[in-house]
Length: 533
Image (tube, rainbow, N blue to C red; front, side):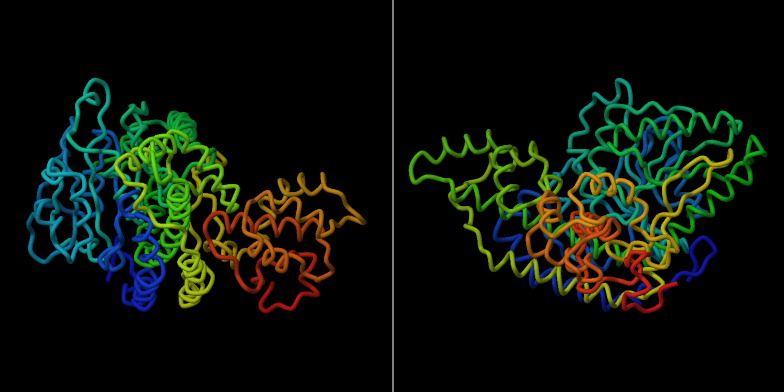
């Protein structure tokens, strides 16, 4: 099998992991979701096609940024329903998938097909379904991935027109299920419309999946391109709320001659990098599903705590008035749940969306807190997920992912992101992964009471509990960080503890034993380890 002229691994390699994911979801997480209305409030339940489908590549951009042309460039052929033009020509959500015989499938048919992962799109109504379709073609690329072309995001007066369905809601639904989200920008018009800004904000929680393509760059000189690149990074950092924007690829993704030959080498390198990133998706998809299930479990737990809190504060009389009061003071409810259960604020759902959903619900029918259900989900995160991750081929966990785009020496290059995810981040790296943030951790360490360059467990505890992680998790982090078991932490051990806290807050499990690549450099000589350079 090939994709973009390169070999890829068959998806069957990961069938055992996918089967395991489905089993633990149905056994541990699904009951919690059903009990506390997670499907009605946050996200529909997952079904087998959500686990089994090919990796999905989603393209988003303002009209005339070249999304459809980009897809044609990848496929190296036309596909049914393809339309290309300077004005908004793609007004549908358009799935492009593999089939021996070419054809089109309307959205209403896709939404009732149990073998496809689109059944829950019915929630967006009939108007949307008439704007949803699939094209089938036998392009070789589509044997490994499925593509999604989205409607051109509107600008100017056009964006005031009502589409007839919740556009950003549909984008969010697909973004949660996509394996890669490509935001396309036209190098000649970087203005970001209000609708495009809303679209980006709707998907920004999936920033690990986002890649940026600065398209139509072949008609610019190298100097002009550098300025445009800088302006794009600045604009996106403000919208995404993060100074480190996702990897940016620069080029002109079409089959026409380049206007400025001086940029040819740059464009070819960028194209190779992007295609390599997409080539890895069949393997990366399994990691993504593991990661998404961890995040989903965290959200479901928080949702259960909120719902059970609302249930506990409903009186026997005056229910409607109390309901309105709780919804109005939902921000206070969030704070109380956060403080009581030591939950990071970032794990709570959008408060405005939560208010709208709660208005339609009967609080008296909510369930009280079932600690056994919560514990089963904790067991899933601490035991079942790590067991599945251990089945992952080592080369997959060691595969380096593309990092943040940057300008270096006058040439756009990629900086390498740490290897793996969670506690496996940094496997195979020569540099101690913790050192990348150690300066920040040292600033905190230097403010703490020390004795001979170390802090006691009491001092460390006062600092670590600020993370609001459960005592059980903080105890495990302390045990792993106190390398020589002397009951004290030096600056490297403290930095390791802060790193593990960050790993946990990001939704990843804490390992039972400290991986060798996380052992601080000054402790490696005496630590029991295997295979450390």
